[in-house]
Length: 163
Image (cartoon, rainbow, N blue to C red; front, side, top):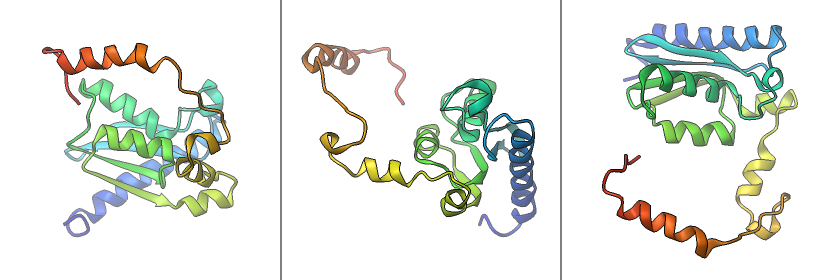
């Protein structure tokens, strides 16, 4: 279905994501990554990596466009949208993409291509497979019993917005 009539449109939107990657890189905003969010054939949000220019380690291109698209569409889910990104998403962006629930993601470069230019996320994938006690960053569980009542209240809340 995706690779028939829509091919030219997919290529158009991917080219725009690649252009955004170059724009961000050339303006020294961050790494060479760009993305766009499309709904009904229209770009809703476009952006590039802004990690170094904003001192925000979460300002990856996908995060930037997900935030912007959700703001513009006044929703926390992008179920009718498609994300085009210049590179296979890192673990953080992959998580955000799954939470945003787009109907598809198209990517250009692979994580191996990113590794070749010193953007290697494999250590994060490796960390996810480890037990908490074996991770590079110390994780300590604290005050679980104090926090559980908040979860219980959420479970019983009648006017919550589920997601």
